[in-house]
Length: 229
Image (cartoon, one colour):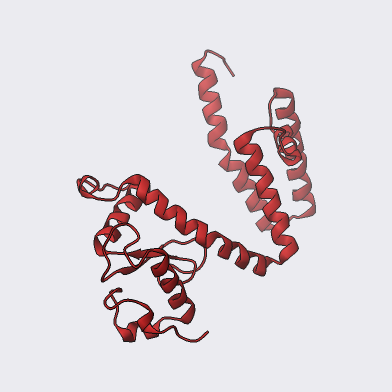
């Protein structure tokens, strides 16, 4: 892909010099020009039409966040709207923003719409890249599995068979607890016999000692209820 001409953008539209534009990869230039047209050669969030910034996601789902990629460019914004975006992002992370949120001219609704448009544009690109890496059959098998799980988890219905098996493996009675404990002790004994190596024995003893605090808590709770051991 050849470089896109600088004159496709209005004068002083971007906060960049011609030399900086030429340094961008052709695919990045194409994304910027496409966004400029879709935004009507204005800021994505207001009517500003000069010195716009190529605003990008610093923690994208795909690719790097410290350089421009086709996966992380979110839009073209003015400096004020760019600052307002950072306020909403800090709020999402649970960080303190003080009076900045009251002074921000960007509403939560506008912020969510902006992020939604970005995700709608980038999601197909990410899926295509994942499919390329994993192979078509592997990707779609994984994709269909996750789709079925999401439908069940959020909309209800019959639970997947693997979830039923998982639930059936949970310890829900004293009888099952003792059966599992007996099986664990049998496994430990067989490992000691078949693998009498310091490394194996060390891991077994370490794991046993790690559960000591749990049994101590149970013992303390029983004594507090007047049950003598």
